[in-house]
Image (cartoon, rainbow, N blue to C red; front, top):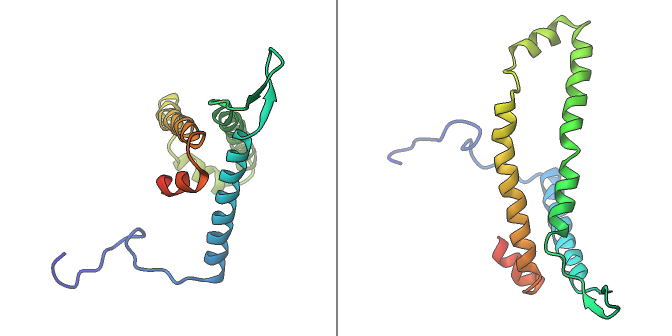
Length: 145
């Protein structure tokens, strides 16, 4: 950029101060993310009895991806439930009714457009978990970024 031009908009509005709340969110995210990786790595170091009775390492490649999918599966019924509640409240609140009418409708096309990134997100988790099974957790976290 030439001159003393300040970026406009929320993404380039400048540096935000480090408040206590921001610090707490950072620390909670750091601890939760590290704990999740450690527990995942511990899961892959467990041994379980196989079908033939011998002790085998527990290395299910798609287990965590399935858990992630199962957890996100409840987002759509939650969305539909909150929309139903909003529509019900809007019957008695003209301002809410006007705000809802001004919102663009959620179509099947919109849901499919949201589904594509979700599929890639599940695939990325599958690949990351496969990598975690073969390298140490600290190296995995460094490579993940």
